[in-house]
Image (cartoon, rainbow, N blue to C red):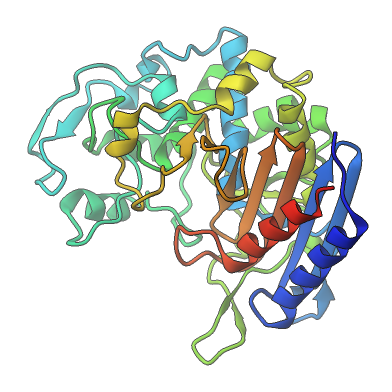
Length: 382
């Protein structure tokens, strides 16, 4: 098992402090771990208005880093026999029964054909069930319908219960036949509904009982946990300087794709569980499936996400996977959050990296701060 060089850790701290000093981000907390070696950097301000410094135990809205935790929850129920990966999910999600599929992406919503088969949990977990984020020029009808239904991701999305979200998805046609194309985000939202219904308890309570409590993730949950430690979320204003991101201070509702609040040490506990093969949470077989590429070349080719997204990459269950061992870092598996967070675990080196910032992403590409963090983190591995 590798560790870190003192010089590399010093450069990591200096580089992240420079990101704060140049005004790229208002503040951050970053963690790198190899085996028992753990190093944390906290820089900048958690609350600009109140002058609160960032701390190791500062809390952040981790946005889409919620997705891997949702996937793990579903796999717990698969192992318990309450959910099945390849059985029709309509038993738990009747809203997804008898799906209709658009004849063409830019067509009217009522120009559809029947789905060729039922949607499965596997389709939801690997994001191939047929619906997701659409970001296309011309604003086609399905794109407008997703926004009007309140299903477009983002900090200003309307608060909806899990049942209401499932009903909203059930009212829309699919873009792809089930299993034929990868589309981002929506699968995790529906996985949460299936988990809640199959477990017979609220989704947030299931996460607390089966993942957070066993792993000692005492500061992770939905809403504003320990509000005085919650880092504010800031964007750069039109006149320069940082301004609060609208809506980011409101408590979040339980959801499968976003909404969790966490800390670097809490998320490290989740990452270590996966790296160790599941420990007491999941079986090694489930972890291997979750963290390996689950997509075919045809499914990747049909993706409507950013061009080149799948070059050297794939998708497991609720997270991204590097498939090219020569790819630029970060490698391994993990995912980022739209409010400026990033996590990867690289089994080849044993490196776990977690970066939590408070500046929203403006494109699907990795932020400058995250790119610098990963460059310096890999350089620090001895």
